Image (cartoon, rainbow, N blue to C red):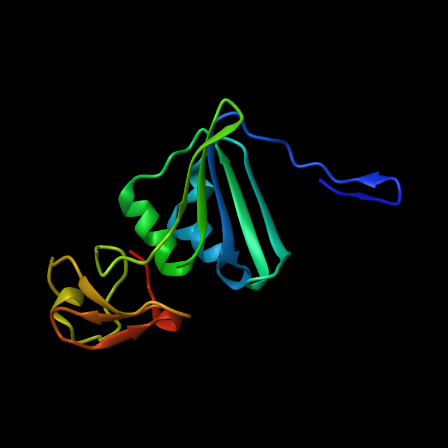
Length: 155
């Protein structure tokens, strides 16, 4: 990585896995939590408060031997709408994508409204994304209340 006055910082490359870059620093631990990375036994490296021209401060996660399904990618996109996801195979980037928040999400977060039917019956919460940037806001398809980024409670 860098060489500062004879000291070298090294972050090992992963042979196979996923790199999530350009996560807003304040959301790093939320991303780790919603992806349940604490339950993974492969190597995970993360950096926090790294310099970013675009974000000012960013975070990065490198997960060995883990490839995400679309539902997990949508979870990342809600917390880090412009994150970059890179798929690594044999130490090479084989696919790179900039995440975009989907127009609709379901089964990812609870409705903020305590009276919403989804909080009292076995109904999967469904939302329309009404704001994608800078922070995501969701409108419940059942009660039409808006849940903003600060009030997300992930399932």
